[in-house]
Image 1: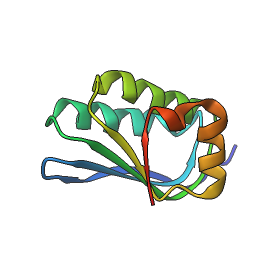
Image 2: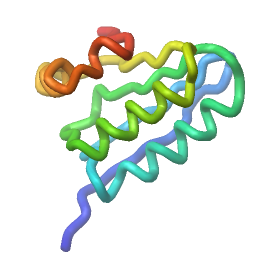
Image 3: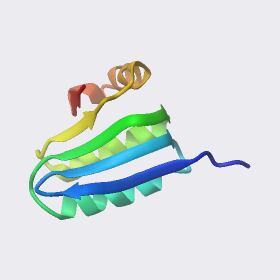
Image 4: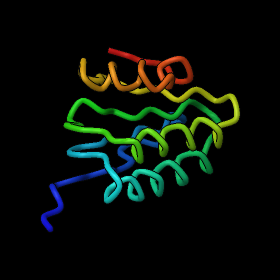
Length: 104
């Protein structure tokens, strides 16, 4: 099995945690995003931003990781920055677009 290139990394922690996601967010790679989200939710009280401009795919496990983060944040904003049109469509279909802030 070939696992595609993937990266989930916190790149800023100045009151706003920003996590950059690159590649396919799926059952194999979602745990890396969850680890970053756990770290981001524990440090600070501002919004958490996930930059998905370079994310090429998201499956149900990736959606689950985002939904879990919304619950963990308990009212703190979760922002998805630069989602592609296909990512927006998946978020709309799943209902997650009403729980997160989408930013172009």
